[in-house]
Length: 325
Image 1 (tube, rainbow, N blue to C red):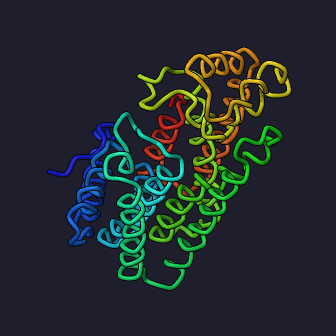
Image 2: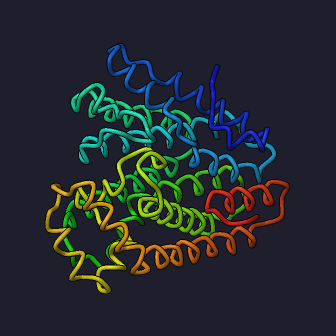
């Protein structure tokens, strides 16, 4: 039985379509190597919310005569692309846990995780080439993947740098996270026939930016048990996010000696950084940015043509980005 995150049960039609997307993802994994196959199945069942496929489907719903099989195939392709980036991320970050569960690299080893990610990239483009109606259906995701890689490279180049600016951070997450949200909205819009591709691009980008900001805020507001991964693991890996970047000018003398420890930070050091950032207002600054991007997305959604799906898109976006709908 194909199971998707319970958050979608409130929306029966969307819930059913996401189940079909997930079933198509599983059916696409035909590699004979048992270890790779088990590793991929494990990550597919690790509790991901499938937010990106949901947005693709939602945008496609403007067209009542859409080809659902094509919609689901492209949604499956983009989610497999997302999973592939996660597998590679965990190897690069040497992460042991994700969503409170052991990562594939920790469980099966880096080699298996890398090959599994590479295999998923090939499956992604197989699906796109089979179901895309024109060349743009492949070109748009290809360009998006280039931007994702650029975001990852920016993160690597900025590792442990204490002079990273807010603009550096925003540019990084624009590539690393926002691109896949943007792709999902744009590819869904292409099925809709609305003629609102540029608006879909802006909506996806704004949602992705807000989503990443809120995820980075979590590191400074919850404990390891609540978060599902060690608190401030990004800081230990040299990845400095908005709350820390915004706080540095205000408590540089206290923060810099701790950051100089790099990957030798103790649990006590992490808690000290967390407290300093919260007290310096870094979390509030990050929340302000997240709210601005959220409102950009909401305002653009409100300008879309009227349709039965539009209130649902607004409600889901508010819920996802932690605003009252």
